[in-house]
Image (cartoon, rainbow, N blue to C red):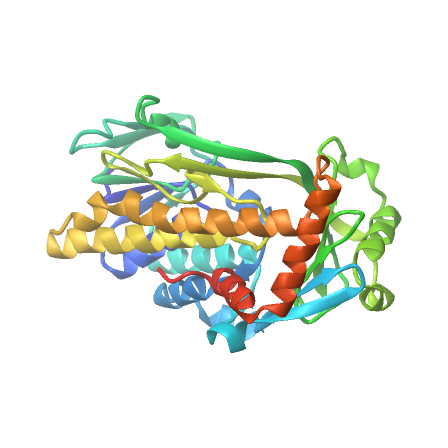
Length: 389
């Protein structure tokens, strides 16, 4: 079996890359370790930057998003019972789209099916070979047999635990990481959202976030200890704690109900450099992770896809390899700015176990500065809606 670009990972970044390349006449094969049902069952954030919305349209999969997604022109920041609004539209002329990552993935799967482009699921033991040569290939186990896929390039869209990043030699690879001393307990419920826009709440009891998937499906989070288990929290305990952390007027109108999904996610920042080794190019979580504050995970993967798809199109259409040569440098320049924003926003909104009285007063002053200073609001809004590619 042979293709031009082998894509390891059938999540949204791998599928988006495959769809953009297909529309440019470039052949791809997507290899995914899990089943399609498993991939579509994963619950992830659903705030799409302007750039990702544009990429969905470029990929020809934006119609359902336009119909069913929710445009958000701003977001609410709360400290206790006080809250203020960051007006994205006024400050930047742009907005974000609330549209679940599962729906993004579903749209991309359907487009790939319609194109007849091969997506191979249940691929085990995926192993790239000869990445530092002009003839890389991949071996994998599927349906009880070992298969070989020859290609020109390999796109590693296989997440943090995938095989691709490990193929970069340790003497070349640098990994920078920060782990945060808390997690997020998230609950999905079939209830109407408490607010038309997201509420990010800084509370003496810890951070809380009121989010949504659609008009009848809400996603809520509270900061929790890393030692906690979802089983430690009944639904009633979660709702009671959430109400204590958000403004009183929001707590009063909050509609509660049984959770249909409950999980705890640790928070970390991680960057691998370089994002290219020979004919291998890393995208998304394979190369970098951000804390979920500000919903940048999928959006940072999308920026990688933008740079890599354009570089591959230049190579195949114009025989110009400058974009491929500079891919890592270009992608990382934006990634580190996004890492800064996610770190800053997380530091602003959470309670840390080692915070001193001085640290807390500085945090309060930072929130007040953001509330009162339009330049600070504009800087935040520009990062939130997405830095330009």
